[in-house]
Image 1 (spheres, rainbow, N blue to C red):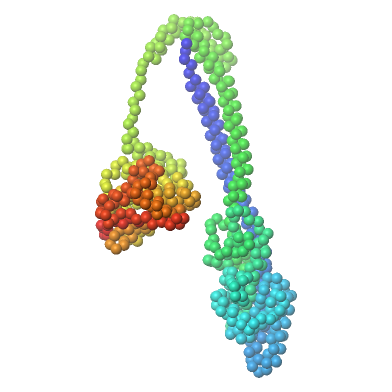
Image 2 (image 1 turned 90 degrees about the vertical axis):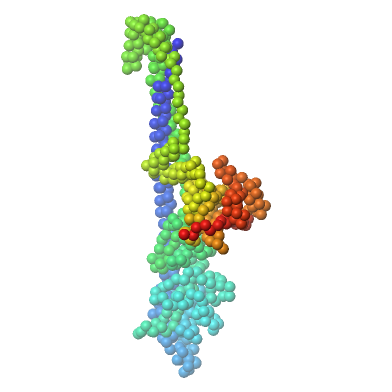
Length: 577
């Protein structure tokens, strides 16, 4: 009985399924990338449209206030008031009051006509020293204490705004008219010049309540993780939290619109969760397409099995019958195709060369009695280094920089472990080993951990340190400090000289340690999770330092639960050159 060999059928199925799977994966990947790009662009365009509408609404309101401010600076009645009020009062107090009342009526009428009283709480027109001033309030009353101008002059924004030739913005400020600074305002201060020269006669002060801007933004719907920012000038940015403005620096990936009249910038950070929610729908469609293509591949595999594999199995069965001595003609294998030609050849062969077939079957049986030995190559470090080098090369060619970096780091780390025989190495070489280890860990944690160096003197890198001393400390910071925190983390290595000794601080912003935990770590009760490095624990490093350099050297740990952990190496200063 011939032993059935299904390699052709397996190859056909594998080829069909593999081609289908590759095609499906390619289509799914391309669809995902294009969909993600489309959704991001659509989200940004939608956000830009929204902040255009919001920005134009705010810009129109503030522009009306700016126009009113320009009118005050150019109006002849106001100009005459600030120019002559002091002299008029000194000559005749009644005439001075008439001048003030006339100017105030003129100002208040314009204030009511132009429609800016909804955007401005208070308008103050004053001489340079603040002795004489006019005031109108959105409530319609011009009453106010005599120290109104002095409060404005003493505010932190007066000097910077009055010195500007054009409109300048100091951001959101405390209200100088109230003790607690509430409600916050956006101040406008402009100088009033003599009509025929550049002499400054006085100034005008206007305060725009922040509520004016907030009212325009109330229609904006926020997601859980999006944000809206208002920027007045470089370094003066505020985040709108739905109720108020909080001063905050601008993040990256913002959609920004500059208001044409005021020059303010309205920026929006699109919601990542909303994008993910929309992407889920596209992913379902992509998975549906993937499933359809995969199902088509399965149908194709069954079709190939019916068209090719079954006839081949019949031919194999016929050959098995011939091997058993049945040389009769089998017309069932003579199909009207190429496989039928093979069947007719087998039938002809079975009828004419039965003795030759018997002889050949015996020869084949003899050949199958040969034994083969499989030689196993001993994998040595050189083979592993070369293999990792090949992986790095292939990853670089394919643009997989992460795989290339990890392969390079692992290769160097394995080489250091396998070939390194020196007990003491320079701090520079120890940092290189630590970089290789941290590269692997950084990719493992998806780039959520960072490692920084702060070296006060480059000559300190020539000092000697025990080999593989820093790695257990960094490993402890990652696994027992940063990882339990559940968020991104930072490790800072600070190298400096203190009292003639080399000090290295390894600080992480993890969950910290209690005094009991610190004692366990230094006593060797806390073990590493790494199979290789678990033999080189923190207590082991501490003992090696003391054994190598003396009892006055070693490791100290300082920590605050929920805040940080700092592990300090104290080593002899052996080489400053």
